[in-house]
Image 1 (spheres, one colour):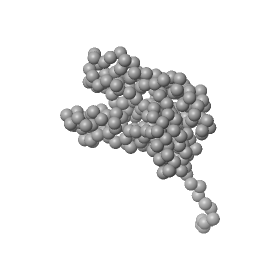
Image 2: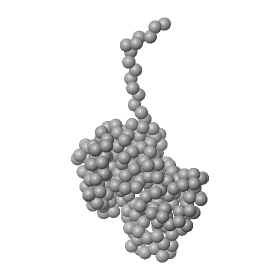
Image 3: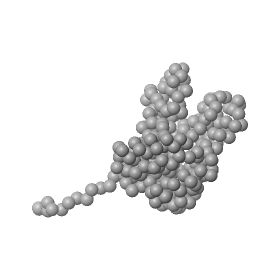
Image 4: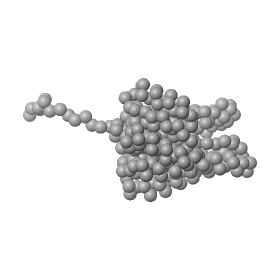
Amino acid sequence: MSINSDVQSTPTRSPFSLDGRVALVTGGTKGIGLAAVRALAAAGADVAICARTAEDCEKVAAEIEETTAVRALAVPGHIGREENAAEIVKAVVNRFGRIDILVNNAAANPQFAPMADITAKSFDKVFQVNVRAPGVLVREAVAAGLGRGGSIINVASIAGLKSEVMMGAYSASKAAIISATKTLARELGPAGIRVNAIAPGVIRTDFAQIIVETPQIHDHVVAATALGRIGEPEEIGGTVVYLASDASSYVTGSVVVVDGGTTA
């Protein structure tokens, strides 16, 4: 039996490909957010970078356009202010014509203290940025057209799965966003929108600086981790791509723990 050598095989699209999709990442100028922006762009998605400082957003957008074949947009804004949410989403849609992926990564933890000592101001800020702001951005993104095939990814924390001394309000806010993730998955599932959360362990970022750079705390964390080390932001970026892509098309309402075995 002969085989026709003229027959060309059709390349198979990778289930991890994000070609033609548009992603908005909050807190996208450093740490996990920056790693997510870079990973999404590498997978083919156009990316919008949101953070409070315009110069930082523009710097990351320039890097992405210089090093990849995708488009990038700087959308500075304070997600803790509800009136900014619609403006941020509108800017993304005006530039790219659509929004397919929302990564709610920005977070706050202004006070490292026993929960009984946390001020009302600090408690309110934590919930404003970590819980209310992602909810408002989801509302605005869905209203702006994030629909069937879309993916919403909330960056939570293992602090939302277990108690964390000195981080009570932050832990409570991450437990809340995990609960909200599951509810949104139920509510938006019929529209074909998937909603998942990532629960990182301790990652080497500015946000975790006090943990990483305080020897006693660092050594305690490392000793409790199966892999015996602190995680790197890039190790969360791959999980973001997975949850944003068709590779996770039947995954919604899930919490993906990426903690090096801390909770094992």
